[in-house]
Length: 547
Image 1 (cartoon, helix red, strand yellow):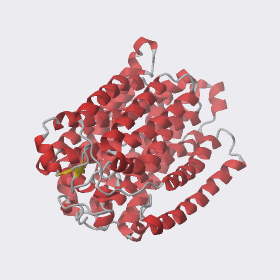
Image 2 (image 1 turned 90 degrees about the horizontal axis):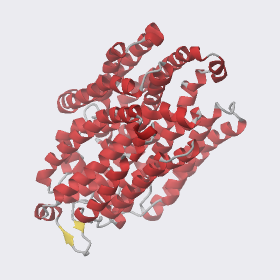
Image 3 (image 1 turned 135 degrees about the vertical axis):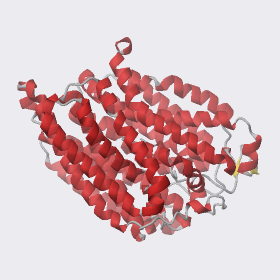
Image 4 (image 1 turned 60 degrees about the vertical axis):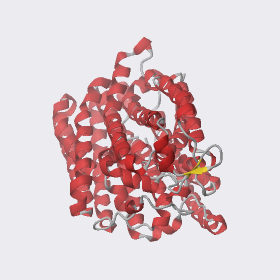
């Protein structure tokens, strides 16, 4: 997980209320537990407990975000304590992203069908239990399995957050509410790595990295107890049906692609690995065929294939996927480089990343509020070029100073990278959605968010190729003094690949609209028709809350 998704809507929060409310939950009304339908605005105004409900869902969203950013900074400590292989390290992070991506759209639809409070509480309970299992993991296999469970639980919990907010607050209060969300999410993006560094560095009760997961237990229990009392149940009047076959096909295809990538190098790239990766293309083809059938059968596919006829959307999905790959690669190899290669403590590594987070947040706010309305697509393309320039500068700095590099020498490239990233992450979703027909806004948004998580998982899988592929473990075992130089070289290699991908992203961005039309946001107070954002169950405008 990377913090770029978290920062995107954090910076856009002042103007995000209209977007999020247009695309989240049913705007026509909500079905309460008694089976009657009330107008959301009237019910929300009368219910003064709504602010407690807001605090609960915001806390859960904060917990999910912080948990993901915490894990990155603690990876080296986990590797030493459990003796985890490089492949297991990748799966500890990629497994979460994969499970989250596979269940994200379905989790939103389940909330529409069976009740958003019910699914929120179920997801929170699962997330809390999975956190306990992670914290108690006796070996790398248990930790990987627990992270998969945690990602699946997050896929149930996270899509309900903005839906609950939407049906709890009237339209005139949502601007303030989403502004608060932006502040909390921005805080999580910065505090997550620092909190993870402190908890790991303090080694509380000799538990080393385990408190980064165990800290979720009291928060989760409190959210469950208070959520049952203060969150009002709501359902979509007309929700699409589930597409469990589509979910299964996506999951199998991704596993067939990512598993050989993470294990291939350790096993000397066996034939079965190449066959699995080739077979994943067959499964993806089967997914396309089934989704066409599902569309004809009942009109509720997991993936709305007609969206890909919109050139800007197809290009935007490609950008989202490849940008997720870049982030998946960078944040993991960056941590390994600083803590294992340079031998830095978790706290030193965590503090080094603060200027980066600040730069992302600053540029994201500037891009949404001032630059994109005036310059449109050029802002995103400038972001890709600036970020690539920052990566190249980091490449040069890492090579010049080697293992003697200091944190202050990393600040210039990190800030340039952060500025470029901020120009991309905040306006990207709206640019991709701007030419999508309004009736498919919900499905499109859910697919964008899912694609970003898939790209992140794929990037984490590719770490074995672009980073670990350049490291000779046997040589390092015989000569540990060469670890710093080997990891620096691997880090530079990863940065080189990231630059190439960003150049490709820059070119693909020419297919985005010159200036986003923003028509989706303009319909925030119109009733949602069947099949639109309100009834689709798709987790719309949710990137601020995912891992």
